[in-house]
Length: 507
Image (cartoon, rainbow, N blue to C red):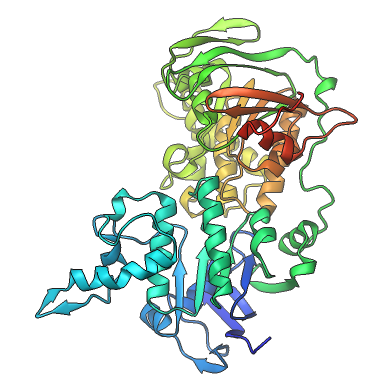
């Protein structure tokens, strides 16, 4: 192997006297996919922002590109050094064409006017190389998230980048779009591009990573070559302790009364959900799996009254119940954790205290309608202790917390209502490994207490690790059920067979 294309040596960064990075080293070679892992706040993004020029490092470290020391001054300096970064929130202008986005900041002009024809002509071969199914003149607003990722990659290739940084690139992609992206990443690696891949998803790291570097608390804690990439090793490096059981499942659904708590029968919306029925028992964790578009979230929305149904009825504790809004569902004892905590769940500018108490604010009203702040603060502080929420205090804005802590704040709000049924839609999306393990422990403890839990997840290892039964949806129907028993465990193959309809699986 030839010399490294990138060497970062002793790189440090402080913010207001607090060390975010402490003498971190990173070595990357051309033609490799180098996974960068660590919990939220470990320093991954800070290190990459230094490399791309968004942040200036503290004095004392060194960055070398192809063996030569470089001083990267601003994002334009990063681009001039051959470095491109694709952030989780894509930085495209929707109202511009694909070609205009690729040339943004480097436009071609003739006689003082934009040479749009020339830009389209030069962009065409790059899109063809990437296998794009759209044209240079297509508006970005008309593209799917997967297609927009291609535009970002095309922009990096057009800038003749040597190093491509990808930050959680599959967060908003479907399974099919993710697979196409993986194939493209492998193609770019074969062409000699160095790719730094940031992800919380272990399966992606296994599938793509040639090497893994792990940060913890702003420090380098280890680098692993391909044969050493194992879940237990990575998790131990990330969280700083042995993790004997990542997916905690100590509850025993057979130890509870087994009484049905939630029964939904013949639920349909005339579009995405077509006559689905399910039952969840006390102390049971039921998984709802299936491909994106199968109707999982839509079924949950019918149950909680967030969408109109054309048929179906719901029973709670064997009593019929008419639920027309999510508020009525919550009042009845059915709590729903949305898959999009930032847009639909949390009020990011509000404090953790106010977010946690939002669903029970009426219970804390004093005579005259004034809020009992002492009671609300006590509830929030108890939630912090019970769920291990890490923040300076309950009064800080929830928007400043890590993804895992934001998710636990939202979960705390639902638990404050003491629900009988908890529906969790993608409960660990965008959450780091350490926080995932903590959320699994919370789910397990809730099941021990008798709560009936439905987990909707696209993460099959998650479904397999924490659930007692799995219902698999396909094209709006429940295609089958897989049960766990003393001699039989779930497998991804069984679930995918039902999800795709490729073979018959005995439930």
